[in-house]
Amino acid sequence: MPRHADAPLPAGARAQAVYRALRGAIIEQALRAGTKLPEDAIGERFGVSRTLVREALTRLAIEGLVEIVPNRGATVALPTLEEARDAFEVRRGLERLMMELLAGRLSPEQCANLRDHIALEDEARARGGPESIRLAGEFHLLLAQMTGNALLERYIDEVSSRCALILSVYGRPHSPECAISEHSQILAALENDDADRAAALMDAHLQAVAERAVLASAQAADIHTLLAPFAASEGLAPAPGRKPRP
Amino acid sequence: MPRHADAPLPAGARAQAVYRALRGAIIEQALRAGTKLPEDAIGERFGVSRTLVREALTRLAIEGLVEIVPNRGATVALPTLEEARDAFEVRRGLERLMMELLAGRLSPEQCANLRDHIALEDEARARGGPESIRLAGEFHLLLAQMTGNALLERYIDEVSSRCALILSVYGRPHSPECAISEHSQILAALENDDADRAAALMDAHLQAVAERAVLASAQAADIHTLLAPFAASEGLAPAPGRKPRP
DNA sequence: TGGGATTTGTTCGTATGTATT
DNA sequence: GAATACATACGAACAAATCCC
Image 1: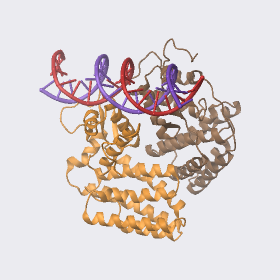
Image 2 (image 1 turned 120 degrees about the horizontal axis):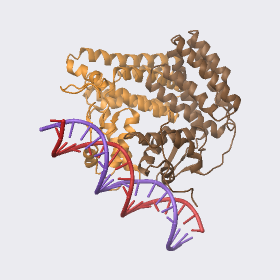
Image 3 (image 1 turned 90 degrees about the vertical axis):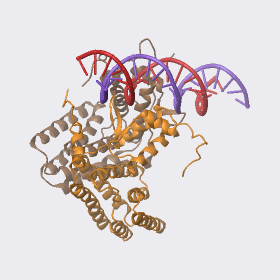
Image 4 (image 1 turned 45 degrees about the vertical axis):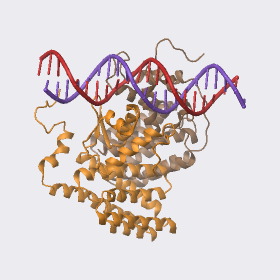
């Protein structure tokens, strides 16, 4: 839920807000792989000093969404094919565990929530908007939340976003990460208490996603413009009276 | 490999050095769970400013080894029993994946390295030194490195260190995390190209480690120690005179 | 190759918030 | 409960490295 920009965020929350804003921008491909992320430009855009930007960038670098080279600054990560393989390999392991934890344990409310989410994905996909990428990833995150295992949730969140970045590099531009019918089938298996089938479906699903990755290229754009919607949604104000570079 | 203190570290490497030093101290239980970690004192100790200490503490907080409360600073994390369960659950999932990736794929050199490491563990264990904890964890990390999957390696490193912290809270003081014979059996199964058996052994091994911890904490008698993590996780202080909640 | 402009690395001061007496 | 002491949150400024012409 978005905050108003003039209500100051509590201590320690602004760095987190910058982190979330950047993260969202990367996952939705507003900031494309390889884009330079200069500390002061971002700080101006969000109305914070470089200190907080650095903290956000450091966190993103640990997550693998950003690459930091000493004395040369940060860029949106440009994963190699090997890193892509690694990410999907780990993801399969984690999501298989998730299937085993969830099979036969979902409440009717949880199942309803998942069906609602699948419907949302369907709509977004029909419109062809960039949210479909985010929504597809969020289905997996929603499942992770339902395990009640906070660490698993964090890892799945992390590896999913990394996979999203990978698809933005190697996949077709703006293609949703997951096919919707596959999500439905997985949910059905989970409701059926069929852990093995759910795990097998998820495995095949992720395999398909990985293989869907083919080819693409990216182009840069002005960072102030690209970041605008993400700043607003996280309650960050741009610095007054500074324009996109002359 | 230790460096000479008067050779200054390159840019960006000092924060990492502080991070590693603190991490090692926590894992080897030189800094015990719950210990306050003031920026000033640490910076003074390592000869760096608070900025770099903050960066190190932030990284440790993301990893779950340190807890940071806004405006109140950092302490060595005091994992709850639920977090303990989560950590071991995720760890089982990751290490099972690791067994599948490694079974039948280890070179003779790698097997020899692993045997050497097991021998080291054996010695340390016999001496009863605190390194045995670190070494036991490093066996798992060594296996992870051999998968060639850098992300899996990072996750296993992270979850292993978190488990080490958990054992320092709930386990017997200075007890090694892993029984050596279990490591040997796992290695044998991997050499034998028996992925299922390796996975099952690893599962049982981690299960045993987890249960050893809970059992030990139940026998540990002192009720103050036993309750401390629960009190802390619920916002209660052991000392008198603190309000429940604003 | 060189030098100025730009960006990052780090320190440290100040304001703010928390514990203590 | 107020005053005090202390630790943290954040930013400005300086130093060093890199980039670019």
